[in-house]
Image (cartoon, helix red, strand yellow):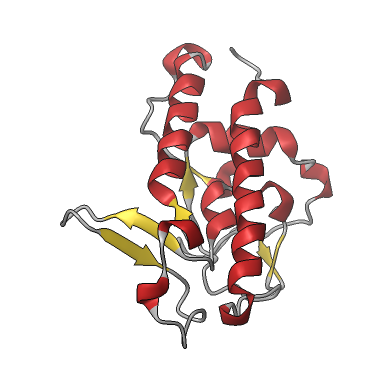
Length: 174
């Protein structure tokens, strides 16, 4: 596969659709505890993504419709944050789709669950009330994304990438 098209990314787009549906459900469940809103960019930073995400986003975006973006002066700022708004929001990566909402992971250090959520949210919420039913199952989502990426790189440009390679998102537009 040298020039993937949008159909190549169907599994990735399906995962994004599932994540967006879960986001909508979690936002409704937790709306009284969520302070994030359009214009909030506390979580926005320069990230790297799996090759499948990079090329899926690139295939989906109309790069000509993105405003002229300056190159970040440091390695921490997201290149696509323009005036406190994401210039690639409809095509944003998985990690950006989950920001602000409660994320549940299996801890690497203990055989226990670890919770992550934005510091602006859930300030008056008993964190013990989080359950697998009212949080993102990030281990499952990350496992699915990893498998989708593994299948993608296996057929992409004669092994150009390994299944663990990451590409800076800023390189979408060079």
